[in-house]
Length: 301
Ligand code: NAP
Image (tube, rainbow, N blue to C red; front, side, top):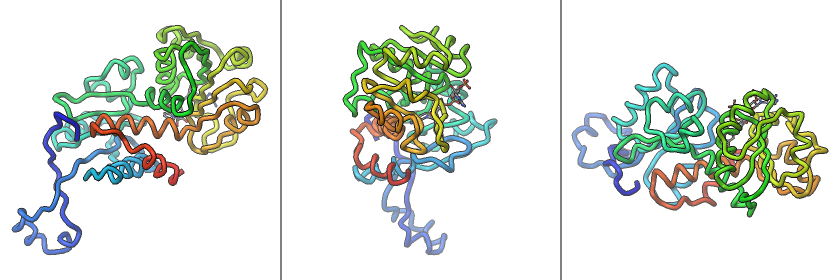
């Protein structure tokens, strides 16, 4: 746990003792061998999540005694679930659909999470319960990992949902000018109105926008579990770095088309990895073992 952390409150009993009589366990509480930190994911459903193996690989690599557990409260129970997690001494929670927006009512959101309007990481280790959005930093670090510069570049973001918002703010903060294109064009305009140096468009403008762009991000769900792409292949070119937020499959049709035209391609698992790395580092106060977490993640995909 990081500096200033609250006290550990979880005890882990050795497996061999768990099969002994409960009465004996209760009589020998002084034999508890270790205490652990508990982290987790709040969503509904969460069965498909890749976060538990990724985070637990990180704890194992650093020798941190911790577990990462999934929780599926009913939407109406969200506030009670967060209060309960704090009361029980849980150290941190990631947040996914359908709670990312509603969590804002229950935590002290940082500036980026407030701007994006969504929280994907709750930190219980400080004096107050704070909310953060690590999707933005996850995308930034995915570009960094591939040596893609953003400052002064022209970027096109396809999608104006949660991922599109996080990535558009990140790109603007990094110094890029951002063109946001969305199927529902009005949503692109609404987002562009709050993101610095951004413009909003419909998908029919993509070819024109991409001619002068050096960065492209797919922040729609198009391409997930099916061989479709939101961007016409003819619009892609070799001067582009293309990040697809979709990570199932890893090699989407967009990334295949982009690679065929000589573009730099970055799959969605890089963004997923680094949003987890950001949460891990915030909660534990330690540099994350990125390679171990990456290997665990890619083994699951
Ligand atoms: P969201 O808030 O529901 O937004 C969905 C976006 O996709 C909207 O812009 C929507 O356009 C667009 N869209 C959906 N179907 C479309 C279609 N058939 N044609 C064109 N556009 C379409 O979802 P989200 O949370 O932003 O997630 C978007 C994708 O990013 C998902 O695949 C998600 O798994 C992925 N993601 C990845 C990471 C990561 O770490 N790699 C993190 C977050 C999200 P309209 O506004 O017109 O409906």
